[in-house]
Image (cartoon, rainbow, N blue to C red; front, side, top):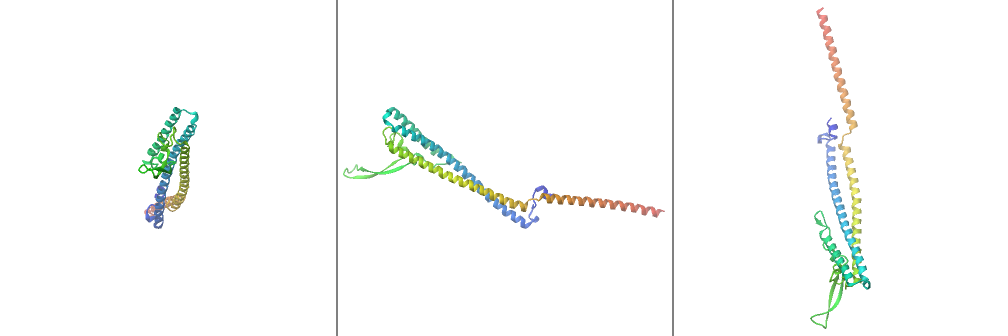
Length: 257
């Protein structure tokens, strides 16, 4: 009755000492596998969050690229129109920095810092006249990034080098796309690992069940058999008692006569 009620063949170590040890090992394996599965799913959520952030950045970069192409057609645009484009470019670069500085997952920043200073960044070395000695030149490192597209930057939409600006934005788009591809590969690997962990958990649970769980068909059959035997024994005892009582009555009647 206990095995049927609990669903377990082993309810205490004395039921099957060797089986109880095996069940303990299986429980430890299951605990470890479930922890790995939880960690895997957390990593998948983080990868999805990171991919979502990169997708938003990618949309902003494409919009930024469109403005650069438009601003490059200087002959057909007035200074007011170029300044309007510049204002939009300023807004987009600020939005990229805002996303990269505020986008979080589980309370932690997804991006390491301001992407406007790192995406598509290029460095060049230029020779510049030394202010202290006009007869000499010094090497100056010039760094260009998305920040350089803003007003006053070397790549601004009004008076900046738009050809170089296009190279910077192309590099930023390529860098962001490469990052998304890397995240996608990691997510695919995590999904495969999750399936493997689920198969391992299923296998260990099945092996544990074979040792620990009740065989209901067998236990119910034994219960019914024992109940039938008990009822038969009780009936036989009752019949025997009646026969003894009748025999005693007959003996008593014969003695009186």
